[in-house]
Image 1 (cartoon, helix red, strand yellow):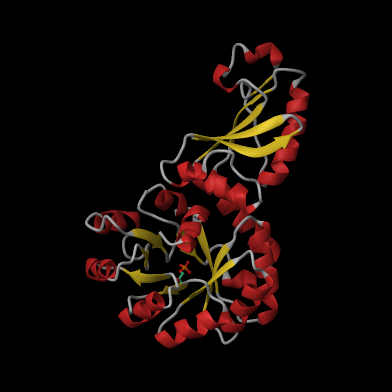
Image 2: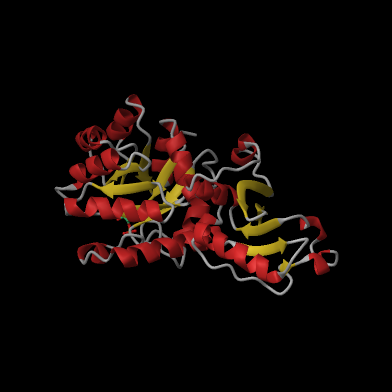
Length: 317
Ligand code: 3PG
């Protein structure tokens, strides 16, 4: 699969922003980056859109900005010239798709019916946007319509939010969920970037679902474990709630979690590949062989992070 599309999948969510004021490009991109996102979509629904894409592409080289609401070849050209690294269209327009393919720009066209999906397959596409997902029948509809199209991955869009995102993501044929709920137009209008930030965090928190599995100390005390946890909480952005048997020290290591003994903080996560990608966006790499993570997703990944003497290990929940 194309690398950009792969990144979208590893991010799990694709925020869609409709921004009418160029001055909002900088805080928007910064907030997304600060919260651990690196792929974003800006719709061509406003006059400022192309310039906003251009600003983000120039000033945030670590971000991958794409253009949405691309309705024609002309739109696609404008977006690509502005710096868009991928194109999203609401419906299936063969000319726009062919243009993008001819220029090697990843394109995610909107489809809804089996006929449109078959066209996407005929064009050699691997990823389509299913739009409007919720209004068309939601996950039940997607599961039914996806069955014959084994090569397609879907980006459900339209009516997706915090409440239904995870159920879509748990369907393995879903690459990522896209939507404006991360960057609600009313929050953009009032410059409420603090709220946008907390909505974004909540979404990532729900996707990754980090839970403390265990801390094995082999020495010292539970107080040391708490101290190390505090440092880790800053990196993963969320508080870690320990259960009684998840924090243990030398005295009880022998009785608990034998397999995790050693100086490890072990976090379980809903999607280990997405969790590894989340850390990598923060420049914390996996020690485990990368090809293994992309292909046969491993159950355990050790990260190249040591806090005090604790190593970080991720396990699939
Ligand atoms: C789009 O731009 O693809 C959709 O309008 C997004 O739909 P949503 O606003 O329901 O997330």
